[in-house]
Image (cartoon, rainbow, N blue to C red; front, side, top):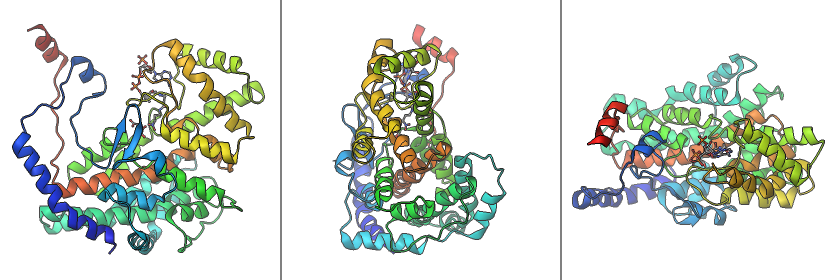
Length: 425
Ligand code: NMX
Ligand code: MLT
C-alpha cells in the first residue's frame, strides 16, 4: 500500500484528539447565526460544517491546505490528492508509491463496459459516468467490511481503499464514456508509464503531437479538484456518505449534483453561449455588440454562464489559470478570443444590471474554449472532465470524515408557519 495510508495513519490519532479537545473545551461557543433570509436563501454564508481539505476565500479563491491554487498549477493531480488528504505534498517516493497504487487498481471490470454500451445512444455523458460508478459499487470494500462488522475506528481504511480503486479507474471510465458515447471507435488501452492525467489524455484519443493536450488535462484535473465543503457536489457527497453509504454511492450522488447547470454543467453551457456568439456575429464581435447581446440575454431572464459565484467576489483564480494557458497555446483561436472579450465585457454588463453579487468569471468561464481548441467539440462531455477531478476532493473529504468519526448529517428544518411565529415574538 502507498505511503499515503501510512502518512494518514500517523496523523489521524492527533487529528482525532485535537477535535475531541476542541468540542470538549469549546463545544458551546457560537460560530455563526442563521437569518430568515439565509434559511430561505440556500444557507449562503452560514458556517455550520467543517472541511479541512481546502478553503474558498471570497477575495482570494481556492486555497488547498494553505497553498493558493495558482501556486499549484504545475503539480500533478495525484500530488494534489495526497495534499488534500494529508496536508502535505508527497515527496518523490510517496508520489511514485501513490501512482503505483493507482496503476495496480486501474483495470475496469468488463461488466461496466456492458452497462455503458447498453445505454441509449443519446444518454448524457454524465449519466454514463454516474451509471458506471454505481455499477462498480459491488466492488466496495467499505460495504463488505461494514457487513462483516468492522470497528468504527477502522472506517477510514476501506474508505481509502475504495477511493483509490475509484480514482484509479476514473480515467479509463471517463475516456470510455467519451469513446462509446461519441462513436470514437475501440477503447484505447491505458499506458502504464504515464501519470494519471496524461493516461486519461491518451485514452481519450485526442491527437497530441507536442504534449500540450496532456498539459491541459493535468491543469484541468488540478484546478477542479476541490472547492471546500459547501458546494453542491461536495456537500451532497458528504451527506450521503454520512449515512455510511460507501464511496461509490456517495461520489455518484455528488456527481449528480455536479450535473446541474448552475454547478458543473455550466462549462458546457458556457461554451454553447460562446459558440452561439461566434455563429451570430460570424466570428468575434465588437465589445459593443457583445455587451448588447449579453444585455438581451439577461433581459430574457437567462444567466450568463461562467460568471458569478456563491462565495467568490473576485475573478476566480482557476479562470485566471485557464486564461493564462489559453493565452499561451491558442491566442489566435476565435473561440478563445470571444472568451477573452467576455472577460472584458461581461463584468461591466452584470455590474450595470446590479443583481449578481459577483460579476466576475468563475472556473467554467473559459475552460471549454481550450477543450474545443484541442478538438473535443462534444461539449456535453465537459462536465465529465470536471467530475474526474472533483472526485479527488469529494473522496479526500470522505476519507477524513470517516477517520474523524463524523456522524450522520441531520440538520433541523422548520416550516414557514414556524418562521412566521418566530419572527413575530
Ligand atoms: N448571470 C445573470 N444573473 C446572475 C448571474 C449570472 N452569471 N449570477 C448571478 N445572477 C443573478 C442570480 O440569478 C440572482 O438573480 P435573482 O435574484 O433573480 O434570483 C442574483 O443575481 C443574485 O445571485 P447571487 O447571489 O449573485 O448568486 P448565487 O449565489 O445565488 O448563485 C451562481 C451563484 C454561480 C449559481 C450564479 O452566479 C449563476 O447562476 N451563475 C451562472 C452559472 C454558472 O456559471 N455556474 C457555475 C458556477 C461554478 N461551478 O463550478 O459550480
Ligand atoms: C465549485 O468549484 O464547486 C464551484 O465554484 C461552486 C462553489 O464553490 O459553490
